[in-house]
Image (cartoon, rainbow, N blue to C red; front, side, top):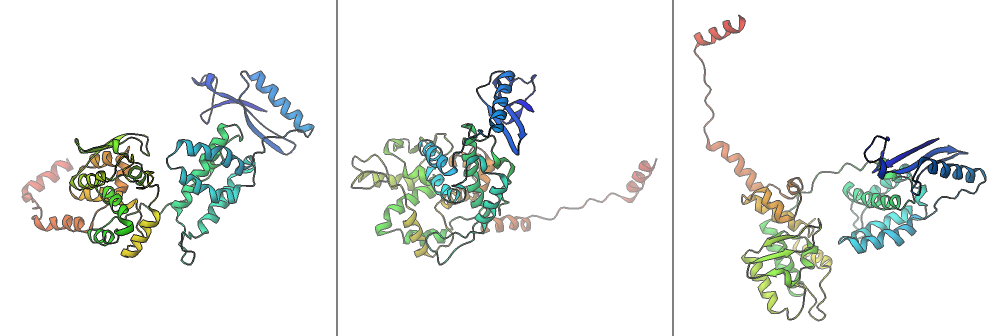
Length: 380
């Protein structure tokens, strides 16, 4: 019989400073059942022992029935409502939950074990991505599977917090090794081809892309931008709600200033910068228009998010300090910023060219007499 206290995933001793905050846990095996669960209502060890004895008695009498909440029920009733209320990226959670529910949906939360997750990981990686073209499937990347696993871990962590499971099995599952950071940005020639296709029905996307390439703003930040956060006097854009939860202010260059000024003239009383003219509701997706424009321009493997990589790469090529790029992108660390900044072939060529512009270092040779004296000194 094991009765102990845990806090923040750690098993504690009585001398630990967090002892008073910790929760009592019981752990034992009986009649083929392994029991390991928290006893949140217990304030003393004696109360935890009584709870354990009650569970033992229920097992003997075949009346023990731990939580049997299905994975799919918990996702629909608890996780997704929380995500929609608290996360800007809730649509991604909705997308990630589809394959998770297909695989784990009819399993009880308590029955999900590490080996089951390992099987999901293998099968998910072997499933090609179809997107909108089933006739041209693409291999699924390890990074994509890792995002699915991250969502699963969050779901199971929430189930643990709600005392529906005794531990998160994802803690014993390793993520897949990813292929390295993506190095894709828009070249000057590609930009010309892209903008040539952002006309007519796609003209509103042209404005969005213009702002993206010149501010580094995320797609959601651009589509949620309201006129009250655009200051034409100070020539700044205020990001009130970002992915990291931090606010930031982005200066407008002449290109963005002119673009937003032109949009403002036709905005009327609409609140959102990018909105449907008839209703005033903000445009919440440009996915189809972007994909069609890229296809028409002959641009392969280009995501809208690559505009942020392009913004950062161009700033770096212009000699802007990495700290300033970090602040403009809204990153918390320069380590993340380094993922977005890529060296262009021209910059690399210029770097090696500098070697041919300087004279080789001159090797200084000491007189033979001095070298002999140095050897004698070391030998002595």
